[in-house]
Length: 428
Image (cartoon, rainbow, N blue to C red):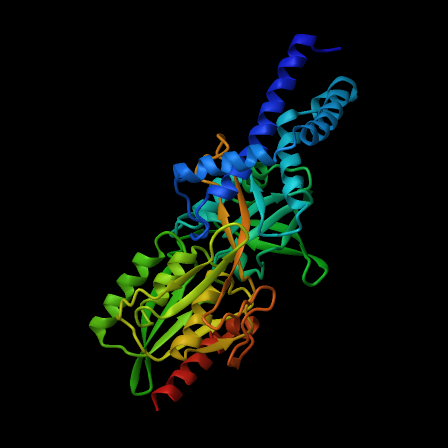
């Protein structure tokens, strides 16, 4: 036996304390976290923590926990002492994998355990502007490979046709099944102009295919705006790539610039926008919708239901709006598109949206003590007419598929072209 009885006992006690802390911690977090703010981190109110702890302790079955933990411990002990290739028996790696499988068993693609590296990468994508050399995809580790969580609009991954929920099976012919996230990210990233070949499994199409992506230096602001001359009038085009930490400020800057230029017709581009902060979506809607209009209702299993109302910023109230959407318009961006259609008569142009009507949140900053985190589903949201679009999406008013080949050859965006035509109809 390679380890003494004393060392074995110490490891056993350490593992037990970690498991119990995890079980108690998640329970406390679910009861005490402010579910109203999707993806938002804040300190737990003292009273809610105590209440959650009380509920956790009262409902915790020590015998049940120990029975299952002891089985895990016996497996670890057998492998640690007898497995032939002993260098493969690495506790940290096995433990992290166990947590991932544990959470994955729920079967919800939006409920994910993030390792410290994955957590940092995911939150970095929500901050807004990027400036480094990569393919423009936010990834996390799954048991069968590396999952694409988000694709940055107009980045190399976007241009190569990659989509959220694509599973990367191989990077340059090397399997990602046993590859940790840090190693995968290093292999995916690289100098501008170099190429990486990915083997992709797309579950929605039940197919495996290979794609070559040329890395580039990417600077992607969350909001881009410009004024376009159409026939006898000017139209304001604004593209929101992600609803992140800086989106509200960037959007407000663009709106103030718009007001100075006197433009009163708007094309809002939410294509390939995978969502972000729920409250920021409400803030953006508040530029268009009168104060106290109901914008959104949220329902939870544990928390009180909430209704969100427009803050009535008035800058763009009743401006004619056409919203561009597609199959990757999801979550918070679907909230904006759906609410603007119902409340101010905005017209949706493009293709049916993704259909993510659920709400996720993160455990508070460094909740588990090692910068890992749990992103988990806590509720669903409903548009002003009480419609939930989970797994169905929003149907468009004017359907126009995006012809990528034509766009590359001619530079003409057929969906944007149709949106411009619809704005001109609204002006007449």
